[in-house]
Image (cartoon, rainbow, N blue to C red; front, side, top):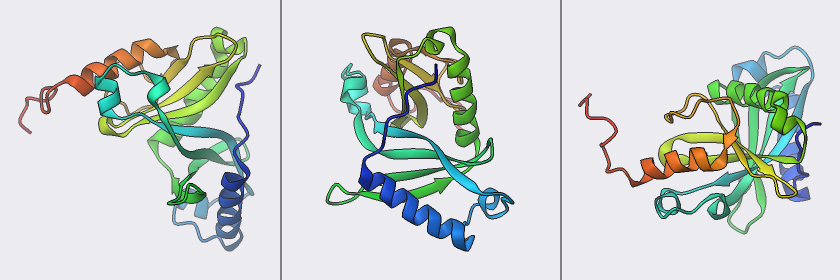
Length: 195
């Protein structure tokens, strides 16, 4: 069974599609992979983005403290993932187009989604696809939100400063403990190399 892809609110859909269609129609992309694409581009795998702050992590709060901050899509040419596209909440709470990205996090996201679908636990279904952003630690992780009493799973995306292996689903508590420890560490404690 596939991961559950939530339906973005109409505002997020409208903001994403109008901007993306305009850029696509005019081939006005600044990202080389999108500008050089030969075939039609499509938005796929919508998932809500949540942000978790260092203060909440250091206080021992979990995923329930993560704030919804926008929506993210993968941009594909056929089956090939080229970029991601995001919306964020504007000043009045409305969803507005935010950014297009390419690079290692995009590639890592696509690989992590495939690995998650191949995982026996996820293959049984009942997990909603989300993205967890911990900007204070430079960590992005797919968040597989368990439905019907299933525990949440996190999949760290490479490159990642955590020791939990990137690209493989782990119980949310495992990664959250590591993130909380890092959030509580004194600044500079992790790197004493001086350079």
